[in-house]
Image (cartoon, rainbow, N blue to C red):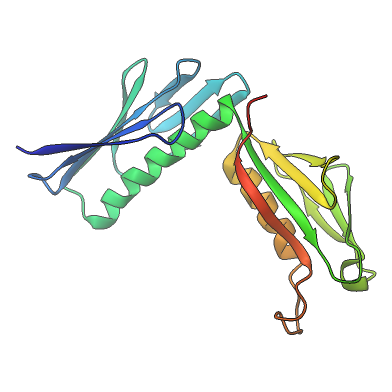
Length: 207
């Protein structure tokens, strides 16, 4: 039986992927956890606790065996799966790794304002991000911050905001909603490039 090992160093928590070439209908993945993280798995509901807080996610919609091998390793098994079901295993493994990164370092999205004539004015009012003077319009665009997302106006860079949080889904979705709220309609998009765009994204850098 030929088994190949592929090691991917995404972060300090690397992921060991094990592919079995002889049994093509069976795959097994193992995800190594951080030393400073506590992981609990109950009925395919994964809860990760770390220095920045805790995150939980439900994977009951995926037919797989999800369990802890020891205090440092999670094992995901799928038996007699087709091609799409095998793809779900790697997706679940990435979700768990993002949860581990979120509770240890967090995620940061930076967005820049792009305008040619009318300056875009962005402010925070409670839990809503208010966008004014987009293309000179009087309408105020409002985007609600999702749970756990923090808004910061960059002090050292002009026309830049920063969104940070533990859950990569909420942080990225908030950034997408802000960008989509400034979509230009009924104009030539090659000429009217105004908007708020994601300029940088990744983990929060260590100080």
